[in-house]
Length: 345
Image (cartoon, rainbow, N blue to C red; front, side, top):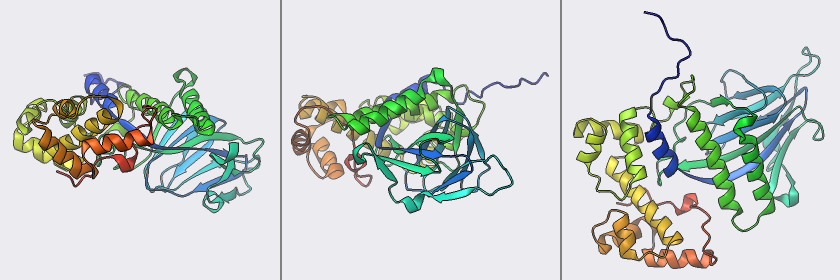
């Protein structure tokens, strides 16, 4: 038998991944610039959300915790797990000399530019850095407790090129945050989602095995069922129907799903339904009864009880509060604090 080399591992079908991409929420967008000159090292700490780092120009090395150094060139994209420290290094002209270390954490919030809306971390000469990265933090979720990147154990590294236009999207997101116009938050989140989608799309052709680090994506059978739930939360899903979608017995499906996701299928389905309901309450003029039906609830009363338990307010109050915050009717996307309470049932 002849070994086939350089063939991507098609672990997840394109249709399942497409459903997951469509249902994915991106929020908590904060972007910064990191500039490092030749002969310098920028040392940064970790925070409790994943980080995204895209190299716009120059060559250097990116080190996450105790992981091996990652060579970065223009269009290198790196996702850093939450609570992971990292540093960016650029060798000097004389390799025998030690690098000058700048502690980014000591810069507190970094230098503010553009009226204080954007942070910039600098190691060396700000006017002529060797490498320039757009860095940020984000959340990607399918409900209150299903974060795609939450359980990521190691960095994700993919090399793109100028034709992919990820640099353009991130620079546009940065400009949106600088301008602070109406809808800037929603626009920047939408642009960042395009970058995340490009990364997930790459998983279909990548030779790297990073996709298996995602609990949701590590088992194609569970992914298929989860994708169906995310794409059609209001459908008449049951434990049996989801198990059939996954081509598993009910007990095996329940156990495997809970092992990977950390919560039961019906708990996750409830979150997805209530998230859809919250979005429709703020973005449409549908009646409460219509939204309840769209979200898979058989009666208004059962929907109102579940929604109130999750959000602290009933649907009517939630809609009124959202209209007060945004009278123009434009939706800015759900904040992490606006996602349903994972303890609700």
